[in-house]
Amino acid sequence: MKSFLCIAMLLVSFHASADRQNGEIIGFIPSESGSKKLFFIQLKDNVVGGCNVTGRFAFDSSKLNYDVMVSAMMAAYFSKTPVQVEYTKTCNVFGNVYDISYVCIGTIPC
Image 1 (cartoon, rainbow, N blue to C red):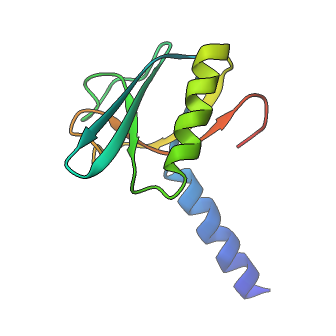
Image 2 (tube, rainbow, N blue to C red; image 1 turned 30 degrees about the vertical axis):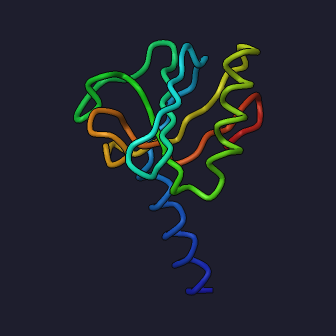
């Protein structure tokens, strides 16, 4: 029982470290830097703060599901389907945008 509670606490504390924003993708930029592919998005009324001075989110090809995430976000952009972005307040992918942890598209809860 104690093990279960410890694991549950770890999962909750890990999930709480990510921030979340819901909205419509109003633009995207596919790019590259060195050997990595980069993908930037901007949501309607995007958050700005800390190192994120552009009001955008990004992720790179170090994510195993990079291609799937790009395809899904482009589909959401063209269909105007709302997305939920889970992000960290770090700018490791690119110096002035928050890093995307993962994204959920449509009405499915993250």
